[in-house]
Amino acid sequence: MPDRKVALVVGASRGLGLGLVQAFVSRGWEAIATVRDAHGRDALETLAGNGLVSIEHLDINRPEDITALRKRLSARVLDVLFVNAGVSIDPSIAAEDVATQDFVDVMVTNALSPLRVMGALHDLVGPEGVVAAMSSGMGSVSDNAGGGWEIYRASKAALNQMMKSFAIRKGDGRTYIAMSPGWVRTEMGGEGAPLDVETSASGIAETLIARSGARGIHFVDFGNRPLAW
Ligand SMILES: NC(=O)c1ccc[n+]([C@@H]2O[C@H](COP(=O)([O-])OP(=O)(O)OC[C@H]3O[C@@H](n4cnc5c(N)ncnc54)[C@H](OP(=O)(O)O)[C@@H]3O)[C@@H](O)[C@H]2O)c1
Image (cartoon, rainbow, N blue to C red; front, side):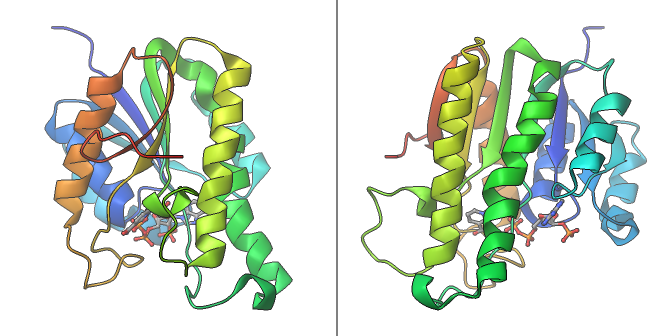
């Protein structure tokens, strides 16, 4: 029997991260899923019953958590590292009005911490593997026609820019992907979003599989469509 492919999904307690774990498992992959507290384990515990899911602890904003996870996984080889964790903020807040700490919290969680996770874990990913983070169409500077979501947009644009720099600096032959999931019905996306989690997560998994071995850095959506930076 061939070795199973392995995906590490960071931020998998609910929403798109949980959906991504389900998408990989339904394709016969093993998934290592991270949560930041006991409550986050609930939905994953059910999935873990099939033997293809293991649960790890990680708050991406705690560097000591990242170091500890790196040590626990040091013998593993990953086919996909996917940093999904992210937060939003009241979309109506203008840049000049946001409280400094609120700005810092969003930027650290959505941009700095994903890069720290990548920095610590990317070398566990095999040469044909994929290192990805959940960006957003709102991370595109050139496609910002509508405005709004100023702080969130900035955090995802910063994520894109830092990922691009990381991939260029490493130049290691792995494939790097900044992913837009579309607008999806989750706690963050809200009930009015047009996409369900399964549709987006399945599309993301297929896109990652299709782009494995492509090398370089790509900004794409869940339908494998390239996006403008
Ligand atoms: N939904 C959309 O329409 C949409 C569109 C574009 C991009 N995105 C992006 O997609 C990703 C997932 O969003 P979602 O819609 O699934 O949102 P969600 O339902 O709010 O889920 C957010 C996930 O991130 C985790 N998380 C937040 N801060 C974390 C931290 N410091 N350390 C570890 N995990 C943390 C949460 O864990 P807890 O359960 O512990 O809080 C949860 O698993 C985010 O990066 C988001 O920006 C979503």
